[in-house]
Image 1 (tube, rainbow, N blue to C red):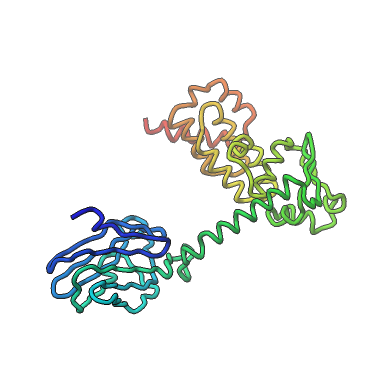
Image 2 (image 1 turned 180 degrees about the vertical axis):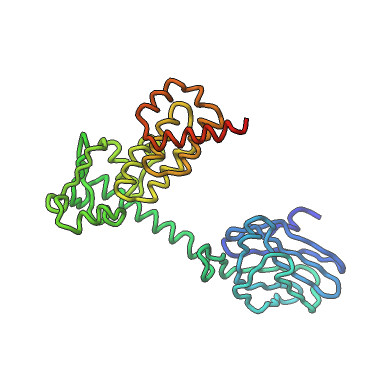
Length: 328
């Protein structure tokens, strides 16, 4: 039998499997075909009764979050006049394995026929609980809306569209928008809600940031930061995130700083981990220095570090050293 006998033709929501001939006693399983987020199979089993099954290909995502399908399935026969057997519409049925949807057809079928499968909707369980979410409703429209909104915010910043506040960095100024800053930072919101000089003068002075770091900071707030700029200005962004209480930026910096600890930056990161209360970064720096013995590779730098580091931090380091070496 040629390979086309197992192939299912698809469009975005429609699948058709053409059967040229089916022996009296037989089993046939289609090649996988993709609709939505899943690969699917149709199978046929014919004895006295014809059983048609629909099920997703087994995978971790199928097991953890199986599809909830609404569909119409038909068998269209070409013997004599074109005739169709139509299964009652399936509504919001979770399909996890090959026993979850079985259609038993008692009517004898001979010659050529088509299994016509039209998906009306595909849903997955919501991560937050509650009602399942349609993958199509959440897909293109939401992504397109988000992308358009972010592009518009980016233009507002880059083109200075109706800016109403000026941010003065250490070596330059940038126009921004009160509403956006207030929405992203409770500190900014407080500034603009009370009779502070920032509200009166329509300026914010951030003298501890360069214009380049400040631009990266605003780009993050407006949803348009590039990864290269983020990596370049991580420490300045961490400081700004802590100062202006932008928790998602602080966490993004924290996660990023964990990824590339080395002998050149470990002491600076340890200091920042202590200063900005980043427990995972502090633990990772301690392990790198003590458990992996890198403290010996930067002995001179470490001695200099001890002369200016916070006393509590120094005590923690020596506690880690004693705890590690006790096991030797």
